[in-house]
Length: 79
Image (cartoon, rainbow, N blue to C red; front, side, top):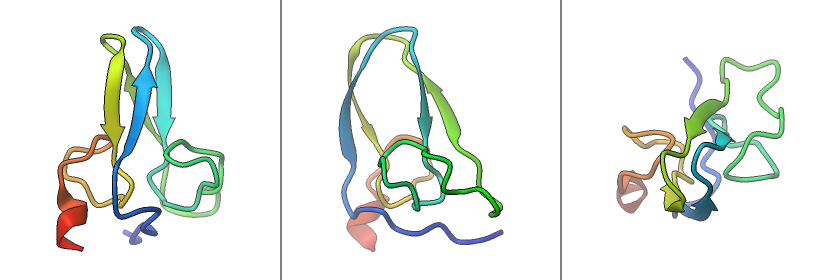
């Protein structure tokens, strides 16, 4: 499998709404980070669907290396 591009070495804090779907960019190429804009087309990557279970702030992974994708697990601290 291909290696994603590192979009940022920090997470993206996003206020999400309960019940709403969000599509996280897994390839790192999107210009709409942390969300997919279709830049993955022609690669092995696909966006990851995240459905908010409550309205709050979540931290989407920016380095694209998280073991808990689409959410940050702190992996960026080791890059």
